[in-house]
Image (tube, rainbow, N blue to C red; front, top):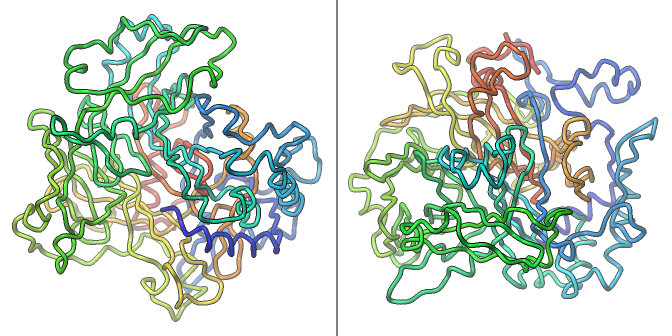
Length: 593
């Protein structure tokens, strides 16, 4: 998913030169803009939610997305400050946090922001190899299995009123889209090749409460489990973006084609950084089948609060991983192994230790395969042999529930000449089929809903003027929860936005949280969202919290986690009613958020 540094540098340099600063980029899509529009009449056209094409509404990507009920942008305390940008409020800071007392605007000026980053990057103490800036991005959220919440040791260490509801994973890396191209090049010592220096795709794990606030986090290094010998199978030979998966009451970690169960444990960390090892991680089964993933950093380099006596989160992973494919996905080259990403797991069966995995949502029915969660990854069988009968019926994709702006901006272009086929992003939640379809009957009460990501064609030599390659959008798809996994409804395309003042304010201060990043541009117009946003996880909220805002919402809500510009980790709560609206056969009959 991380794009070419050279391409990014050129594109970001163009963006820096343009110095686009749009005040509305800090306003969420669900806000009522009446007052703001009256104060800024020049922005009315920019904020127009849709255009008319005959009798149909054609929506902007940033105006048709789901309403957000709450949000939080995370900043892991387990990453040492020496690997971070300096405090924004310090004299040597990289940028300046938005001054909330400014009357006319609350958005950083593009030129001033770029200049401050440039000054920061010009300091030799901030340049590789003296400093390698790490960020947490592309988060994936999962439900914390109930047995952790009921564990006596967890309740004693965390406190009865401080028990987590969710667990999340993060990609901790120095490969970002946080800065403009020239600044990024300076930070890497003037050479793009330095972006590949060192292995910094660490794994971050956090526990959070019902309000998406981090209670405890750790950062670990999967390099520590890559020991290969005759006595055990290797686990996670390759990885980058991580996903957490709930399959029954077991928590799994996946990346690329690999998936393996993990266990979490708590120990007490003292001021001397020693851990008392007498808690639930000493389950004999865990010790025999699992190995601890070593922390990425010395605990002496990490601040654990004022008391210096907080619980330490530890991560254990099975000694080998499973995978749903064999050595090759290439018919003409059996020895070539495919590098698969963005696989979406669902339907775990704790009795048979199997699960379903969605490979390609671009087909209909979906390309869904089995995975044996107990079998070591077999890299000698080609998946076409593994699957047996490869023939299957092919259906056309259902029409998108609403049209988006490309049909007006590029009326002579088909969508497949602008966008690559949909790829997996986040999975899954269940919704009522009757709420989606008003015009036809689906012979099941519930369907599964996933998020997929279309993106503009890369490298984009044949794209029209005004369309940038590797521009990421999202859509919801609804499909049958059993064979043949047919896609029965699709939303139109939309984007998710930046952190927003008034919604993400309560998070721990992140120097990048409200910085203007790579803005989505399409057909020479600027939109209120990043050029790259990447959903990774989607999980239902606990039933007891579905009505906590006093709203009529029989469908409940989901938490969607996504990366912002390969730079931030944001979590948003979305009512299922909004997903249903976007999948509906008649969205124009429903009031837009």
